[in-house]
Length: 432
Image (cartoon, rainbow, N blue to C red):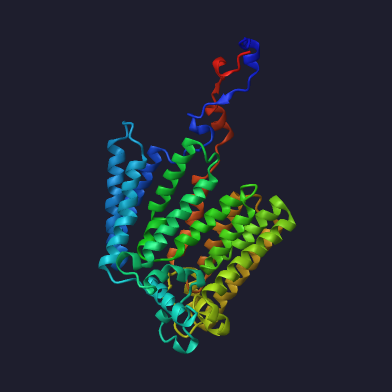
């Protein structure tokens, strides 16, 4: 016997999965993508006029890629063409093409030289760092933490051509991590619309100047930023705390800029999961970072002064040879007034760090999104006050803000408007 109308009325309604506003904020609409790529085109064009060397090469390729994407989106604005296709043009023009061109036709940038040399040193001497007595120029220093050496190992092991360049592996790993972060952050990972949104978000972010520009010229921040995204996505999952700690531990063994994320995210973990969970989280981060550092730089344990010279004193501008990171930000301008000014900048940086730590205790972030906001603010202040700094470091706070925009949950009003009840068809019921 078929169900009666009364019984059917009592069935729970389903939400129309074709209404993506229910589970997606859909920030990446066609019009917004059009505007974003137009802005990227203007930025890349201005950079091509104002800079030189590898930066200009990237800017020329990127301006063409962003410009073509903008044109295609404008011409197809009234047609039912999936926006992923023009975004792939943007990815090719801003990342794939300039990386290939720079790797095969242009001399490696200093960052690439440092990573490649550190891998050779690791294989020969068990440490990616030159001893203090061999640090005769600023290019002799390796300011990165041991895991960064992984990207130089293909060349050190005998690879040649495109596959030997660290930029190829930095790019591949960064894109994979960005995609993984957006996948974890998706509200329903098995939903077809979620998969499309995840892919579009990952392509858009990888093609943006925040990621594509540093990857093309060999700057090492994108994989660290991507690991921060993955950590923030994982702590929002009920069973993702251990994996989040592992991801952050890898980042902390890669570059010192990841360490400020530890207290910020730990504070959010304490609010959500309690004191016991936060100590486990911090313990796993430190354990993973320590084990990776020991595995990839075993001989560095025997020469801690060389490690200190390379990874602490050089970035702070306290070594014999100064870092070329010298953008005219307040901390650097103060440091250029003399040794007193330099120590004053360091003192201001320490004071800002202590004040930031107090704020985490007094008013800890309540969740991952609040932690991302707090981390973006803290990093912006740190880079502003650092005695040796560059504008490029601001990809961290900019990237974190972009992450929060692209992963913003749907508002209640948008959910109510998008939710259209759909009755389960009577034929779907069981017949007696």
